[in-house]
Image (cartoon, rainbow, N blue to C red):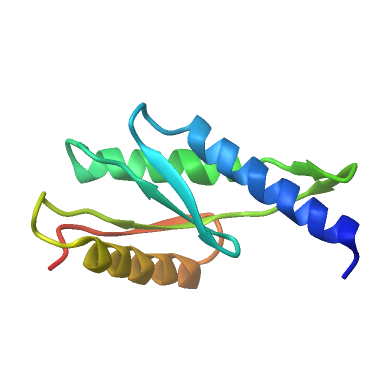
Length: 120
């Protein structure tokens, strides 16, 4: 793999992080888990619908083409959502629930989200 190909991939991942950040609320946090997976922490959501609205904004933002090394790149996103009440799940359980939701969304096709609400 050429270094320009790696650099182009890194550029796209950086742009993905910027686009996700651009559709979040103040106080929400995005981080790259590894590879092409990102996690978004959205504290203080009033309803599951608020989480869904954020997921839909992320999907739309990532549908737009990216540019890397003077080439347009099209990607898509699948979003897994896990919501819970404060203190009900620890961080590991919440991440596991979001991961299960992500794989359900991926199974339904690119550009989709799946919600696991108030998981136990």
